[in-house]
Each structure stands twice: as structure tokens, then as C-alpha cells.
Length: 221
Image (cartoon, rainbow, N blue to C red):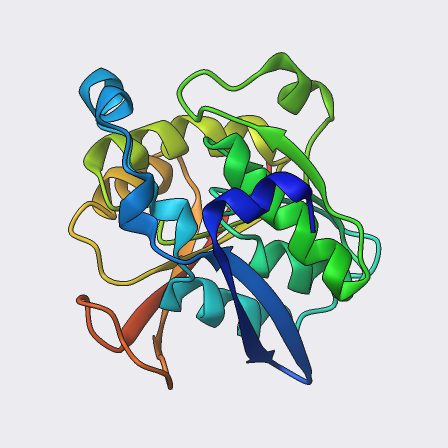
């Protein structure tokens, strides 16, 4: 574990995902990380510091997919569970988040799982050139990203820049009211969309036990 993470008083959780149990660390109290200056500037809150039900549902789904040799990008990785599951499945993974602290936790959790996950700080509204210069990914993943309407619009603009024709995105969402801001522009642009309702077996958050798992496929030509 990186020495700097001790400042967050981390707690360790053993999480069963598919056939493996992952040892995941996260900050003990996310609410202690709220920065009033960050919030005043762009309403930024440390959602990354929680392990959300959507991340567990997405991780479970990824554990059953053939991922060997695929290039995957996680948006809003938080403490990194879906990225780690994808890497364990053989994917070449880039985990991204707005918060550098989230990337530190993701690297520590990946190391504990014995896999390599590359990391990059990314603002969806102004993606860094290094992200786009990596070339297209085969798969983009994300969990509980649509808690604000502005996020859906930013992701709808970003996904076509990350995925080639026929590329896929898997987005797990706990029925947030702003999902349409992502889905409607992409469907209008010819993206295929399938939604599966997955019941989360653990303790639900305030959104309830049902997670929407969205599969979006970029149009071919």
C-alpha cells in the first residue's frame, strides 16, 4: 500500500466477485474528504471513496466475460474493483478518475490482487490528449456515473471518441434519474442499447436493490 494512503485511515473489505475474493481498501469515511473549495469550484464530491453496489454488479458481470487481450478503459474507477476484475480476466486495463487519490487506491488494490492496472487522471469534459492518443478501446466500463445530468452529457460526447465501430460500453447504474442524458444522444446517433435489470444481492444503497446494466454498442460504419 502506498504510504500516502495511510492519511485516509483506510479500511479493508474482502469482496467476493465471481470465483475470487478481492481484498479492497478504501477511505474509512468518505464524508471526511469533502473539500468546500472543490465543491464551490465545480460541485466536486468524493464519491470515489465508497464501494458502490453498481461497482460490485459490474465486477460480477465482467468476471464472466471473455476479456483476454481486450483493451478496456474504466471511467470513474473509484477504488478500482471493476478494473481489477477486468485485469484478472486478461484485459489490458486503463483505470481513470477525476481524483488522483482514487487512482492511488486503485493501484494499491490492483497490486494486492496481483495484477497491473494503468491509471490516468481524466476530466470527462476535457479529456487529456494522452487518453485519446492511446487509440480506441474494445470496451469502456463504468459504475454509478450518472448521478448528475452533466455527467451523462459529457459521457455521451466522450464514448464515441474512445470506442471504434462495434466497440462496447458496459455501464452499471442504480436507476439514477439522469441516465437519459447519456442514453438518448447515443441512441439517436445509431448506437445499439440493451438494458438488463440486475438485483444486487448485498445491502442496497438509497437507490434500492435493482441495478440497470446498460450495454451500448457503437454503430458499424
